[in-house]
Length: 204
Image (cartoon, rainbow, N blue to C red; front, side, top):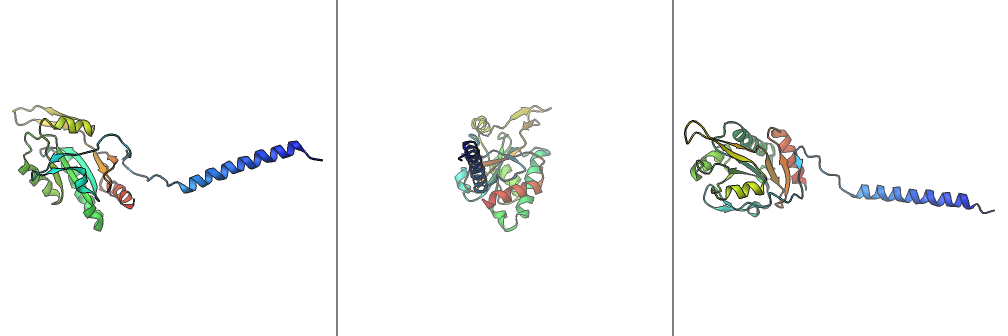
């Protein structure tokens, strides 16, 4: 004799199994997210563009570095610690990447255009690596680019008019080889952590 209760239970069981199998299939097909050590900001609606003159007076945009990982860092040449440490780490990372080192482009944006002349910026970045680029916004451009990249800067007066310092954000932004912003790297992560993240991006 037909048992409607058992048949109904069987239907529920097979339906549940179908859902589980479907979910497993979707899980198997979707790519796992990379385990970045920096902050994954893929899809962010800020830090979209640069349009500033470099140390040679040439206006640079992100598309100029297509095919490379671009690391954008804001600082100033008279910075005593954060800036030289970050730039030195990027130079070290470039060496650690071996043949892929040529795919890394460091971009230093000054928050102190009053003192950071093009000549000074050129000498500063090339002291770390000859391929590094420095950008020099005007005093009028600086607030807009800082807002676009959500970075903080503030002049702190010194004992003389020219001995001031600049408080500023210490992290850096990394763009992938297609020019999309992907990572925010906190200051002090270290060269190895940065290199690991860049290797993941280069695999894409």
